[in-house]
Length: 133
Image (cartoon, rainbow, N blue to C red; front, side, top):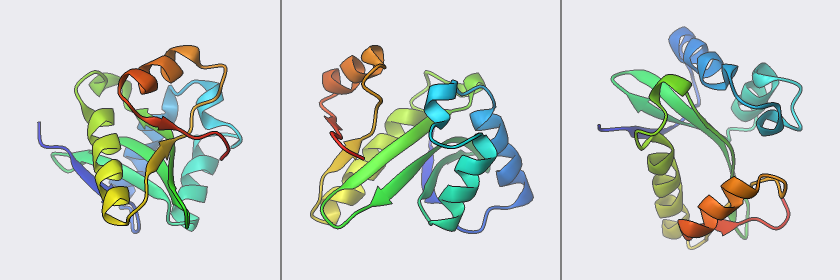
């Protein structure tokens, strides 16, 4: 499944609808500190940090990618429930890691400490977990 990594800069109406679907069933902790999915998406678009995974012209996943001077932080990663467990999140993480490496920096993933299962998964995948966002 060719999934394409994109920076969401000028989303179409369909892209915005897809983003709404992606975050519709996200757990509350994933959206924090944003009040809701719309606020998260708006922030990502305003700050130019929203990245997406596209397949067959539809968005299947999204995250925030904060390109700081000393590291890149990937947070709020979510994949549409219908397409989970098909490599979409892996593709987003791999491409963000590659691009950070090209910039001479490392990618760190932001995971709340109380999400032990995700912390363990990130460690198993050899991802660097951010200590402070």
